[in-house]
Amino acid sequence: MDNRKSKFRWIVFVSVMLTYLLMSSQRTAPGLITNQLMGELHVTASTIGLLASIQFLVYTGLQIPMGILADRYGPNFFLIFGATLTGLGTIIYSLSTYEGVLFIARSLTGLGDATIWVNMVIILGQWFKAKEFVRLIGFAGMTGSLGFLLATVPFSKGIDFLGWRTMFFFTGWSLCLCGLLLYFVLIKVPKHSLISVKTESGREKIGKTLIRMVFKRQAWALFFCHFGLVGAFVGFVGSWAVSYGMDMYDMSRSEASKLNMIGIIGALIGAPLSSWISSLLGKVKKLYMTVHIIILLSWACFLLFKGNPSLILLFFLFFIIGLCYGASTLTFAVVRKTFPLKEVGLVTGFANTGGFLSAVLLPSVFGFVLERAYLATGSMTVGYERGFIIPVIFSVVGLIGVLIIQEDRSQEIEFSNKKT
Image (cartoon, rainbow, N blue to C red):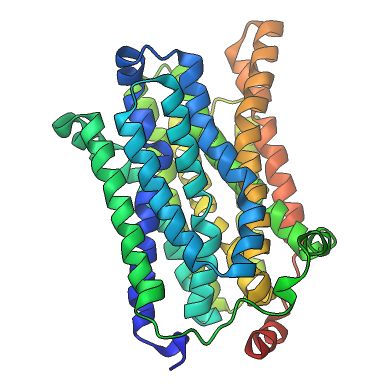
C-alpha cells in the first residue's frame, strides 16, 4: 500500500512531532539554570555565553552536510541517531561536574539537534502528499515553538520540584526512548517504502552535488527568504529583547520577558495559520511575499519611532514579528513543491543554514552597533535606534529572496517524484 494513503502515516507524524517537541526544548532549557551552573560549578558568564551559542553553531554548520547525507542514505537512521544523541548529550549535561564536560554535552546535543529538521521534512515528504505537506509543515513549526514554551514555565517548575540535574536526566532518557520509538515506527513496523531515496543521481559525487546547488537560483532564493525571517526573530528575541525592554521602558526582567512570550505566541499561531491559508490558495509565493513585506514594515516601525514606540504598539509589533516568523515554515513548503524528493534534504539544509546563519550573526552585529553608538553618544536610545537598522536590512534580504522564487513547477516535480 502507498505510504501516502496509509493510516499509519499519522502514527509517523505524531512520533516525529513528539521527538521534535522534546529536542527543540533543549535548545533553550539550559538558560533556566545559569545561576545554578555559576554557583555549583563556578562557571563564568563568558563560559555561559559560549555554552549558549555552541549548539546553534554546530546546528548551523551541519545543515548542508546533513542534507547531503539524508538524500543519499535516507532520513530514518539519522533522525533516530539524532534523537538518541540529543538524549545522551542531555544526560551527560545533567551529570556534569566540570566545565569541559558541559561543552562536550552541549556539542553532542547540537550534533543531535542538527538532524531533526532536515530529516523531518524528508520524512513528511515521503509519507504525505504535497498538499497535505503544506498544511503539516505549519504544525511542525508550531511544535518547535511549543518546545520553546515547554522550556519556560513547565520546565522551570520541574526544576523547582525535582532539581535541575534530575529534570535534565529525565528529559535525556525521554529523548532516548523517542529514538527507540522512531526505530519501531520508521524501520521495524513498515514492511517497505514505495519512495526510494537512493536514486542513481543520489550517488553522484558530493562536490558535483554542491556545485549544482550553488548555481540554482531557487535554492538561493529560499536561503535568502529564511535568512530574512529567522535571524531577525531568533537573534533579537533570544539575545536582546529582554535587555531592550529593561533599558528603554524601565521594565523589570519578568516584565520584559513578556515580550519574548508574546513573540512566541505569535509564532505558535503563525505557523499553522500560514500553512492553512497557503493550502487554501494553492500557492505559497503571494502569501509569503505578504509576510516578508509585513515583517519589513514591522521592523521599520522601530526606526520610525526612534527605537521607542508606545507600549501598546510595542507588544503588537512583537506579536506580528512572531506571527511572521511562524510563517517561515513556508520556505520548506516551497522546497517540497519545487524540488524532487531526491534533492529535498540538501535544499532544506541549504535554506535552513541561511536562517540560522542570520540567527548567529544578528546578536553580535546588533550588539556591535549598539555599543559603538552608545560610546559615541552616551545614549541607549540612539544605540537601539541604530541597532534596529540590522533587522531591517535582514528583512530586505528576505524580501529579495521571495521576489525571485519560482513556484510554478509543481506538476513537473510531482511527475519527477513518481518516476523516482
